[in-house]
Image (cartoon, rainbow, N blue to C red; front, side, top):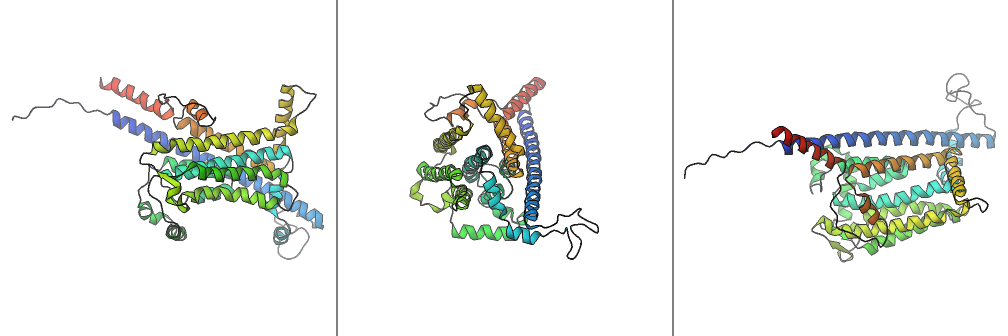
Length: 388
């Protein structure tokens, strides 16, 4: 048979669309990196302010002279014993900084409002971290959660968003062998030891919602008990428990028996489980928000007046103490990065509401056109026009 000439033209549309996606992802990575740096700077600023205030209070209670400057003849870092030197070791030994920080953000309703938002955000974000991290096969998820505890939530959240943007779905099983040269030796050894102690489940394994519900209810209960345990011996234990419980969400898929979960061959099969979990989170979060409204009730004011008084007290608390400012600014930056994440991930507002409001029916609707989709659509249209 004689060869038949094929009259086909080269299409540059897929290349243009891929280039648009790549450039958009790079831009989003830069944005989240800037937000992460801003979160780190904010945490350092308020952390130094809190430490400075704590040291001055400690020095005043013990009659220790404060330094006039950092260097010089009367500077704080002058060698030897002299008035005005820093006594870091004595101060750290005498002052429970972590406990003081937790007590300050829980001692008043307007302070605890900010603290409760961060605690609730930590619960919901750690749930997302566990689900999305397992789906993408991202290793060392505990490091992101540890950064949220040691630095602040917004910093860890932005770093995880960068990791998600740069990670295919899912990573190959031998990803650690491929990236061994870029991982510190100590961290690599720890990860391999952890894998030997906690074997991995089959790909697609998702614990049943009831298992997650038990952990979530326990986490919300500890957040609820924080203001009631203030100024008691149980306060520190309750506060630390709120920080430890989110780690159980990460290790849950690895430690429970296979019979306590389901194996999904299609990632979309797990969506109903995820929706159930986040509806539970939304319900408990709303209940805890409403529980904090009673200190702001003013019987002689109108509803609008009560609202203005409440917001005035809440936002005024940001400047009352560096510890409150630390938590408040962390919450604001967390909300900012979440808003940007929702804008670039092609999320439908109606679907978000269905995932948050219990008993809201699900309807089959077409996917919304987000930022990346609109960019790709524009490039397709322009490319077709040029080719035509």
